[in-house]
Image 1 (cartoon, rainbow, N blue to C red):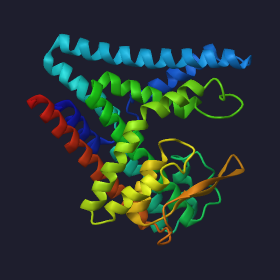
Image 2: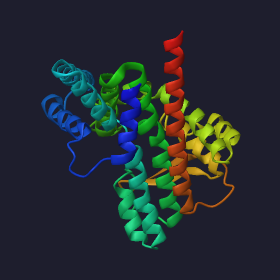
Image 3: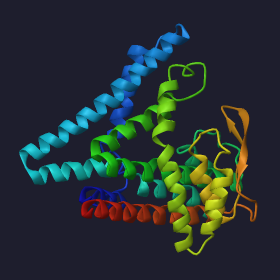
Length: 315
């Protein structure tokens, strides 16, 4: 548990420094390399099988390399093993990075620089941002932070707790695979299907755990904790992802806002069911409110896992 807590604190301090040799970047390069070797414009079943091999190779290599690095470090010296484990644990978390990226949009809106806000948001979402209004920029930022409370923080913490650093890094490999090939388009409909389904599977528990943690965070913050939970139960399924809607709905309930609606992807408008109740219009302050919920939910998660770890040690 010391490794997890130290890694979490390190993430809060350092975030994701520019130029840092982040493991996810190497995972992304590995995915691109294996994809070039396996992808072929052929029968659907062949693409499906190739996609299975892609997932097995990338996740397997990621797990084994992480395991070997840590074992080698411990072989050299226990202190080296601890340091290696903490550094790798830190890299699977994205708390400060999420804060930093969301605040870039917020700062541009404070400066009344809509064009700058659109550009800042374009780095963290896949939707078209060129024509977004201020309210739409706020919605995109809040949705991204809310979704990544689960994907970028709670899920890695959960897998660090359940299986240690190698399992958590394997989770990041699955998450990265989904972000790179898990699309329903002509190229990846079958090749990326395994990656997309596996990502849905490994995020099932963390997404729902995030609802509990966000609701507790809302209570601590003096917001609508009960409302957050109720809206998550009611609207969590209003999303194309079986998981992402739950943390988004919890945040929407806590802040009394409505998320979802029409987005544009590659010039094509796509409507998503709304999440939450439209109690108040979206304003830039909802970005900072979501960031505060993110930090409180993360700290609550660390405390919860620490308590469980203590109880398991006693029993």
